[in-house]
Length: 379
Ligand code: NAP
Image 1 (tube, rainbow, N blue to C red):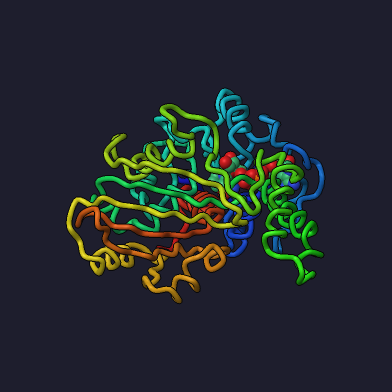
Image 2: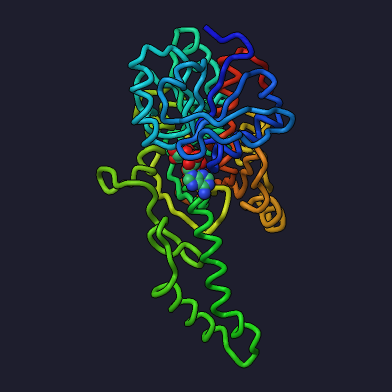
């Protein structure tokens, strides 16, 4: 069953990174014309909502009030997993029958929850709505970006396994972490600005000073270690068998989105936080089930959806188009460096970059809202 238009929609976490990108995208696509929206927050409730284009959304609701939320047809939350674990069961316990659309990972692996990535699994999502399912969760950002970028291979059953090395931006961890990274860049620069201007100083002098700053005096309360001028090969909590939770998600969520049993496609990842502000990159080694040429692979990728954007495997094109700088703020998933590997004819290496705040987080949520409203979507 889908909802009639002008459904009452609670947008929880509107001011976080995912929430603010979501609101911008909803404005760009005029989603607010379809709904009666209210912003919710755990900390700014009771104050007037920021103006959203021509829409005045009244006062901000209390995101911790189950009673208030239960008056809504749809709750879209970008608040985080702890919030979901706290509020979702209480809301359902009231008998609330609305749709819960969630950016967090808390509900993702539950049986009665579908992962939202409609360019890949639109039919699965439509079927779930028709069967009365009410809980939907956006998938892990790197998984969503990989599947849209390489949908032409994954959805055709051509992939046997994947080894992924990710290069994930600070924005994947939220607004406070982004601020921390920029402040770290500033603190490092301020420390060496005079030395850089003084031509008698060598880069070895400057580097030594930066190293001292990094190891002794660079606050990192959110990341736990300096990220500027460094990297952190650990994302999220510890999981079993030496994997982090982020790496485990790559495996289980890929199969779930595709509607496959767990382990159908094996995905092994090493997930690394790097000093990029926005947009995640991934180096992916695929083992294909067939010996396809580079041209065939590129054609399958390009034909699958309008967001996967092929970059020729050339230096200039790569510098211009296959970087976080090039894709940030766009829905394009750049796919390049496509080449066969000397490991064997079925191995292919691909590098892909996408804005994880868009296709990796906010965009699937607003599209799921349109699916439950039975409103048009572009493909
Ligand atoms: P975030 O930026 O930290 O925002 C989460 C909440 O933090 C906000 O809604 C806000 O809630 C509060 N907050 C506290 N101080 C803030 C400040 N200075 N600026 C803005 N908000 C502040 O987190 P997020 O990156 O949007 O992630 C939200 C959820 O989406 C998480 O579960 C995350 O795992 C998931 N997700 C994130 C990404 C990504 O790329 N970031 C991708 C996929 C999924 P109140 O208004 O209630 O205080």
